[in-house]
Image 1 (cartoon, rainbow, N blue to C red):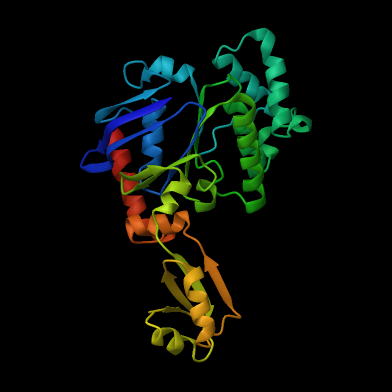
Image 2 (cartoon, rainbow, N blue to C red):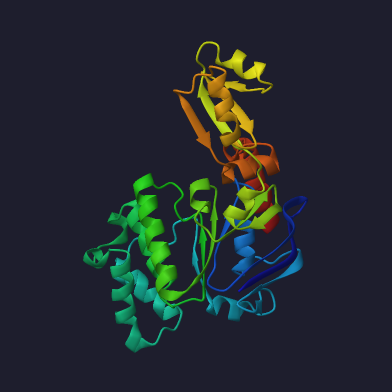
Amino acid sequence: MIKVEKITKKFDDLVAISNISFSVNEGESFGFLGPNGAGKTTMIRILTTLITPTTGKAYVAGYDVVKDAHNVRKNIGIIFQEPSLDERLTARDNLYFHAALYRVPYREINARIDKALAMVELTRFKDKVVKTFSGGMKRRLEIARGFMHLPRILFLDEPTLGLDPQTRRAIWEYIRQLKKDFGITLFITTHYMEEAESFEKVGIIHKGKILSVDSPDAMKQRIKGDTIILSGRDGNEERIRSLGFMPKREGEKLVLSIERSEDVLPLFLSHSVLLDGMTIRKPSLEDVFISLTGSHIEDEEGNPMELIKKVKQIRRARK
């Protein structure tokens, strides 16, 4: 459903994304994972025909995003990172206006509105003006609006950004139900590791470049070893070092990376290493990201001044 071939996008001398290639299968949920400023939104804007690539080609639903932009738009739905509802209208009017723009058959509009509102649990608010909605309610309405015309592919740019954990979980329930009911292909950008864990395929993007594309499980299997986290009890560090291991101290904890935790625990017990405060952690997507980039994703969220500088560069290039 999506095929990207060596896409590069430049804004003057700023390279936003560089030589990116990947594909997304029909009915798949694809997560584009990376920190703010990595190039996620630039990629989604290219795929949704809002901007054109500098070099390379991209196809959505079989159509070239540059040469067949009209046909691409007929097959996609978009939920932008920034709010895009008309807050002066009611929830129902927002959906009706969207359906009309996409030429949904008149006889089907009301039924689709009712179904969309029911799915995101906003039926009783259908005649309320959107400016009275909470942030979570607005996001749910945007999701409902995004599939009013039954797109084959739904693009969601950071759909849970700025929402509280409870609302984020609810939003993901709606998105998963949408995929289950309609078989829609999902393309989702995020910088939340726990969200990316649930995608069928993940593309990790860093500083405008794709570092890995695979299922979360396949990525994690490439990270060898487990992590043991022990409380820094008196004598533990010395005992562990005497066994030939090199634990790192993080605050009051000792952190040890080993190939198989099952092999060393009996050894620890036989040498009086105190295990009463111990956690064993298997590799996670965070570990994958660190192995590929050398840093935590939170550290890559960036210097605010650098992000502001990048935004200003892009805006100047668009004028």
